[in-house]
Length: 400
Image (cartoon, rainbow, N blue to C red; front, top):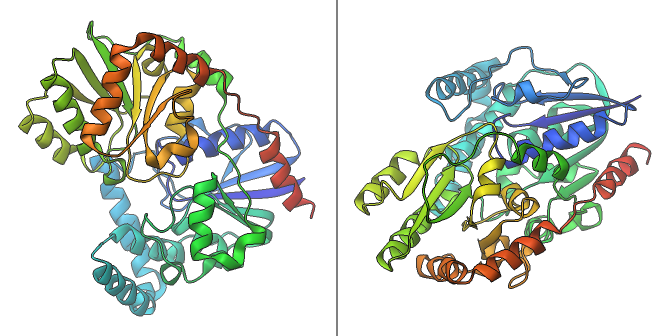
């Protein structure tokens, strides 16, 4: 049996982690691979969902979310332990100082980008050699597989807009040159990555996210979803509460909708570091009863199925799992330009600028035209995701 190792930064509830779970399930069903997973941060609440037969390589693991209070304390201890491991702080100081100086010049301080190198170099070492080692996220997992894993072949996934998310070749130490294959999840992600690494063009192939549409539809029929008795138009957004997701635009768009007299309520499923800031904006806008931060849920799919409009207005994306889930469940969708690749504008959704006024206009149009909402939903639900192409890409690497 071929040995495949997957490495990911954390195993929390997010898009990339969801895609990894489905890919592991797909490969585990083949019964021809020996699958292993290593989680660099050593924590994440999705561990109980790991498919049977997938070996967790971590010596220690915590199931607390990195977004929760106790989970953050565990995360900081893990980073500190890695920093002190075998003199890492002294050895990495020139790199950290140089990377921080670069962030100052760009006027964009991102501590997490520094932590990934620390975690990679201070992480547990795996004794085995693998037929294929896969870094499923940028940053720490990409550094770890490139520098510290023994494998006959190596592949790296790219899930984000490489440049806009803050990565640079200097920060990465050109790690992607060490990979036999690079798998961006979409065409825009691919082009943005190749702007930084043009010499990787021949080894870079699009690997779409794997999702299980049958399972999503099954879970959407389980008990759950909205229970507030609201009788107006429901708007849903699913995603972590981070700056990347541009929630202040959504809050202001909601204020404009209410000012226009629309009977709407906006629900957000997700958790993250921007909660307090968003709660202040919501309160200042008088939207405490209208823009609801619902937190995380184990099963978001009944909410998708019961919503009237799904909105995904973000600053930058790779290829959103949440949009794919909304399409699977027949939602009428509004997205910003960052997700244009996923929606056929005017066919199964509306693409608008990332501005409160533009989002408000797009939503109001769908409120006023229920037939368009229905048409969008039918067209979105008709889209099918075939996973055979993804399996072939991995097989090509394994038997190359």
